Amino acid sequence: MPNPLEPFSAGVVLALGLLTGRPAAAHDSLRERIDAFVRAEQMRQNVPGLAVGVVSHGRVVLAKGYGFANLEHQVPVGTDTLFQSGSVGKMFTAMAVMLQVEAGRVSLSDSITKYFPDAPSTWAPITVRHLLTHTSGIQDLEGLLDERKDYRDEEFARFIYALPLEFPAGLRWSYSNSGYVLLGLLVNRVANTFYIDVLGEQVFKPAHMKTARGIIEDDVIPNRAAGYRVSGGVVKNQRWVSPSLNTTGDGSLYFSLKDMLAWDAAVEELSFVSRSSWREILSPVKLNSGASQPYGFGWELLERNGKPLHQHTGAWQGFRSAYSRFLGDELSIVVLANINRADPTAFVEGIAELVNPALAEPPLEPVPDREPQVTARLTMLLEQTRAGTWNPAEFAYVPWWFVREAGPRYQAILQGLGPAGPLVLVKREVVGDDRVYTYLVRFGSVTYRYGVSLIPDGRVSAFSLVVNQARL
Image (cartoon, rainbow, N blue to C red):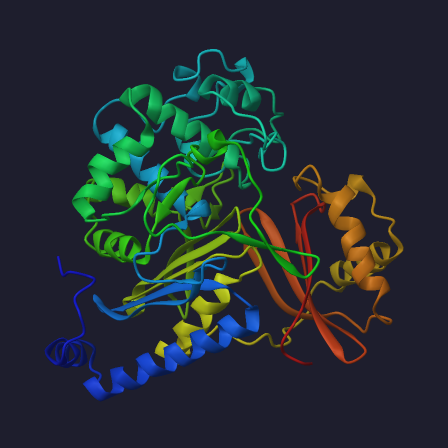
């Protein structure tokens, strides 16, 4: 396995040029263009600090820190700076589970009541696979836990037991941190040790992820970055949460850019578990209907330019992260940032386009609208949003807070705009069992991207309205 942190000596640059078909000088130019883009994007987004890694054909093109890991002490970000993982940590929790599967302690088809015997009887149809793929139907605990309270493992479990089931297991996909909290607890129980310790011995150590670890506030941890948030236009320190909330399997890791580059090399080699286990991890889940949903075990499984794109993002306590693998181009990108408003995906997209322009997200262009009745209905929904007259019965499987909180936010946006122009359909796709419609709509000189997902019975399962960079 090549060392992902091998310095770029002249010989290595020459080897990289030969391997990828690019002259060494071309890679120097690419690295400079990526560096310039990252600096400009950092300034545009006002990100205090970030670390960026780019791996092409098994060799590091860029591994560099930008800005400050700590604003109070003006400590610069380096490749050893530790950032919180957020939900990028889910792929590691999934690996901890698969290690238990291979050890014979767990089966993916087991009902989770085998490991949580005091769970509600209605949980009997929910399997380990359902938890891994966000198809369990267990409500997401995001925003429901008391962030100032310390929870023991049993209290986390009991809290989740009390959450409602939003749909029968396997019916649909719905992102649920609850499922990954349970997976961490499951590993704790069957391995008879903390799941982070399982990762330390069986993943971090063999992968040479030398500084990856769980989050512990008490410890003095070298190179730990501070996380920041923006409040009223002012940068503030991250909010304090109880230490127990940073022990759960939904994303409670520290890792550096070096650690993530080592992880990328290990993923490339399909390390730690068998090839068949990796196929399970990286296969889209099948819903009860037989439809495919582009999510595996802790990985989003998408496509770009007709080739696989495997990725995940994360956000927690003033940190944002993104890890993307463009498999057809043998390109991996890691972005770690330390402010809650950072958009690491924008860095990933810009870097990917610099490496290969064909990886740019296709421009949104009008497509034939063969369902004018749907467009008419969604035009009406947009005006109902402006008027603040959402009917909760028209929505299904949205987060518990969505109609109450997102509705007024979208209403405020629309009331600040002029009349809406006609909806122009630019994309219609089927994801799982849902139909997803994307429109461009002009309000005066500003164009917004308007997205709505409809379940088979026509109810709304997702709604979004964001400024679009392109113009009609």
